[in-house]
Image (cartoon, rainbow, N blue to C red; front, top):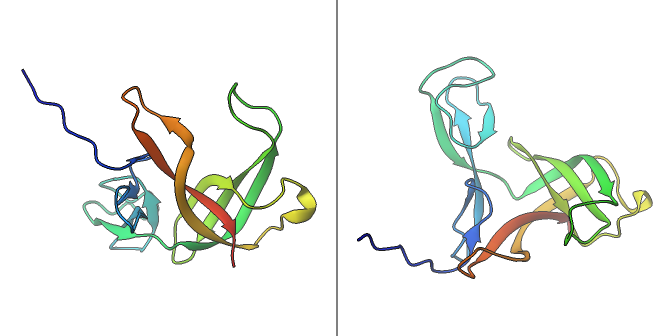
Length: 143
């Protein structure tokens, strides 16, 4: 019979969210040692320059700029709408998708290239089958 691991603290919603149970969660990318390209998720080869075996983990910035957004008015059952789905270019490299929070979902309140911060918080009350909570990342307008 195998023992199940005991979960302490919230679970990360994605593999590249590290330190979920600590006071210092962060996003991890992988950087190419040959060309400097940064990607989410682990990989052995660089899609930009084709280098092999030169990828290494790197901590991503918590600052960025809004590249694109969409105000979602229809979603899956149980998901509150409207919300702002955003794509953000992070300082120092890396691009990721998430939700823009702490701003009214109205196009008049959102601007392309607006500075944003990455924040970490409870994943909207979601829990796994064992009752463990999740932590996620979100974007909010920079202070």
